[in-house]
Length: 159
Image (cartoon, rainbow, N blue to C red; front, side):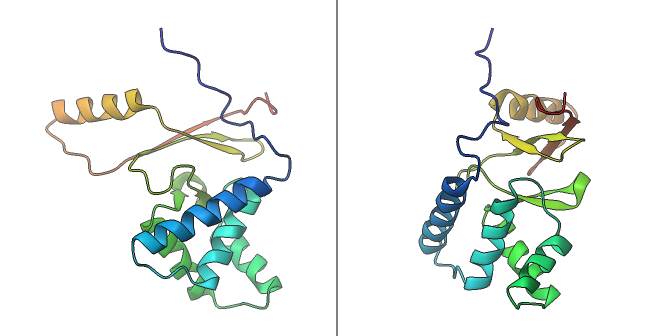
């Protein structure tokens, strides 16, 4: 029997500042390695995504950026597209929202536990899920390029 997973909804700090700092440092290093510009707007959007510590929509990000004096909607979408292409954020289709990637720069498929009540989210990295999808797809003659698994339910706090 496999080892139980640690509680993916737990975070060591109530304000998550270490999560934000680590995410920004990882993003900067990844962009340098990939020879991409980590502009101030890209940095701020990523910071805002991580500050929420739950899925956040583009409109909500736009409102937060307006508080900084930035108002152009295309800027937010361009920044989110860049962050997604770099593997720094994931798009959660069922919520039409974005969440910071817990494994930036590492190839992986998105597997997410999403609380229907409080909208908290936990990213998993379970190779057995990826393997099961690949095997099932192969038996159907299908070749997956990427996939995202979104599992809706209740987190420990809302249960």
